[in-house]
Structure formats: C-alpha cells, structure tokens
Length: 544
Image (cartoon, rainbow, N blue to C red; front, side, top):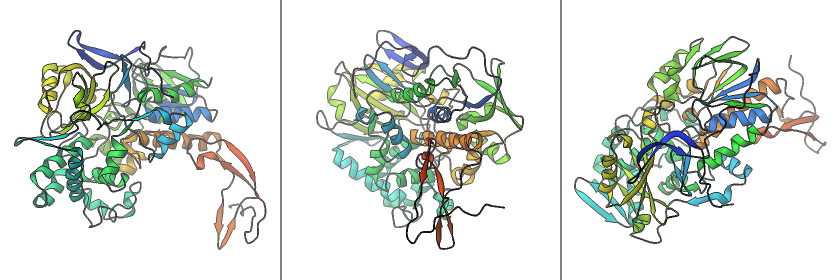
C-alpha cells in the first residue's frame, strides 16, 4: 500500500538537480543506490551464472536463476540498479529519470506487480479535473489552444492516417505485433522512415494534424523524422490495440507512486535474500571470453570472474565497447554498429503554477517537443515532465537558462526545480529506450537475440513484445534465465505432452514446470494423470 516516501536515501552519482538556491549538482538520492557496493569477500572459483548489468533484464535473470538454486554473480557498472529505469525521491516525491509507465496488458510487468503486491501503488499521471484543462499546439504559425477532447480527436485522426497502410489500421499487415514476420509484407514497410510515411500522406493531413503527428512520433522515437523507422511506430500502435487511446493508456498513463526504483528494489532484495546471490557494483567490464566450457569476464579494474554461463544485458549502443572472444557473428556485429537511434531528453520541472497540472503541449520543432502535468509535489507545486528529441537536441546540464527557456516557450512557468538524466551522454546507455532506424527490426532482430556459445544476450532492445519498455526487459531476463535453467538445472527434462496422429498422448506421470506459464518461475510439481474416456494416456515412445 501507499505510504510516505523515504527521503533519507543514499545518492547515486547519476542524474542532475537544479534549484535557484543551490544551482546545478550531479547525483540524486534514490532507492536504487546499493550500499555496500558488494557482498563478495572472495569470489568463487566458478559461478554457475554471471549476469552483466542490473537493469530489469539483469535483475530478472539473476533473481530467477537464484530461485533455481544456481550460484549467481551480478556485475554492474553503475552504483545503482535499474539501468535506464530509475527514480529519485526528492522531498517525498518520486521523479522518474527513465522508464516510467506500465500497464496491465504488459504481461511480464504485471506478473511482477502481483508477485510483489504492488497493484495498489499505481496512480494516474494526468489530472484533467482542475486548472487550465487544455492542450496547446505550438508551431511557427503560433499557439493553438484547445480542449483535451479536441487534442485527442486531432491526434487520433492524424495517427490513424499515419498507420493505415492496409485499409484496416495496420491489423492486416501486422496482426501479431509479437511476431511481425507472420506477414512477410511487413518488411517493405520497415524500409520507410517517419519522414517517408508522412510524405506519402501529406495531402491528407491538415497543417495541425501534421504538426501534432510529428510531435507525437518524435516523442515515441527520440530521434529525427529521417532516422525514425515507421515499423517501430507501427508496432507500438499494434501493441496499443490499434487505437490512439490504447497507445496513450499503455505508454504514458499509469506509474508507481513509489517510483520505478521501488519496484526494481523488490527484484534485487528477493535475490539478495539468498546466499547464492553475489553482486559487485561500480564494476564496468571490458572483455568477455568464452573458453568453451566456461566464460571469463574481465573488469575495468583488471579483476576476472568465471562462470558456466553468462547473461549479457548491456544495451545495444554500448555492446561495441566490449571485446568479445571469439568475436560476435557478422550479423550481430553489423547490428551493433548501426545501433538504435533514440537520443531523447527527459526533463522534470517543479513549478509554482498549480493551474498547469491539467495542461499539455506539443511543439514538434522545439527543444522540448511534448510536455504535460505529471503530478503534484508535497509542497503543492505542479510537476511537469517534458521530452525532447534528437531533431533539436537539448543537454540540460550545459545551460540551465536554455532549459528553463525551453519550458517557458511552451507556457509561462515559474520553475523552482529541474531534475534530469542525460541518457544521450550516458556512457553505459548511449541513448534512451530502443527505437530502430528503417530496415533494422526485420533484418537484425533474430541476430541480436541469438546466443553466442555460452553467452546469452538479454535486453529490452531486442525483446519481441514491448521492445524498449520495462516489460520487454523483464521478458528478456526471464527468457535468459529459463535457458540457463534448462541447461544447468534440468538438462534432461521429462517429456511434455505430445500429439501423435489423432491421439492426445501424455507421460503417465508428467513433470510440470510453472515456467510454462511464467518463464523463469519454474518450481516443479508432480501431477498424476488419471485415465479418462476418449483420451489415451501413456508414455510416448522413447526417441532413438
């Protein structure tokens, strides 16, 4: 249940904070900071699994492997958990520096929400019950002010025209967003950029629709019109039930009152409760070598660690900084070289203007392209969250006055506090959530997901479902942990149900794993099957 947020927290060296009184300072208080930085006194000679990276993918993989009784070593370059998703508690309020919003249609995330009994921690970002209660579209032609209902109608009309490539709002071309290759025709649409698609429909768009659409898509991609792949936007649309409201609900509405770090800490604390879990923070790595039977990791400090398997959760844009031996396959190397394009700026402002709690704006060509009221702080001030894109880059720490000016260009604001993390300059992410350039998704996704000997790769950047989201990271961590479990814990599993001819055939005693329903959660139970009429139950013939 909700309660007062803790305020006396250790600081991470990540993130920035500005107030008129104190100026700019680096480092933010957070539940994500781990103290002490290690629980390792003397490393094991060989671990079962080494997990590199403590974002949601790494935390999920490590925790699930520990559940299986495996000895796990978690190595993290930062001084905190969460990767590109973390929150800072300032004066009793959680500011989300990276990934924020979740939804019950994101299955991996909500499995964890229920596991940790956190459904009552959710709250809604927007509040359109008080204040100005309007939307503003800001272009070189001036400012158009309208109701939020009119905002929704404008964006819904524009986005529908953008995605309607088949006369069925994308459903025919992409009926299964988790398996887009189901329809081979999707490949030709992956060749288009955002700019290409807008060019195709420009005569059908009003000036207001075009500006709103450009701002909306740049919010999604954090890139430019030329390098944003249309395919990834189409996937978001399909995952959001092929509706504009579905995309808004799933992507930018529901967040944790305690902040994402309160969620991630549950993963870490569960793993840390086991004597089989070891961790070292402030431990960037430089090399990974697969020796055939074991994998050796070399840290920047020169320390080396060895395990039977390694789960690498390093983001796509950072993989090139690691020396792999043997070298990665050619297709994976090419994908790493291309990388992903999202260089989004995300900046929080605490302002005195309470009426702006119900305000939102799109300014597609400005340093901040999208902003809205995201909460009310304990001091009674309004919290505004804003996003910029690589089209007009903003590096807030370089010039606070420019950053404040970007907010005031959207609407007059009395800014009392700025909080942000510059993901574009972060050496361990080199970008925000994953968005691909044209042709990358259909060309390289399988190569990015493929293992390399005893090295497994797990990251939201190549998830099959909510790629770039928290759900995608948990999906990937669970996938990697399940592979490790199958190879190290249960290398010779009891045969599963089989269909032979027209007969449904079972082993006489079937070993069921809970992981079949929720990957990574396997705890074995014996289910004794009874003979039933019209169904032949018997052990399948052994394979030669």
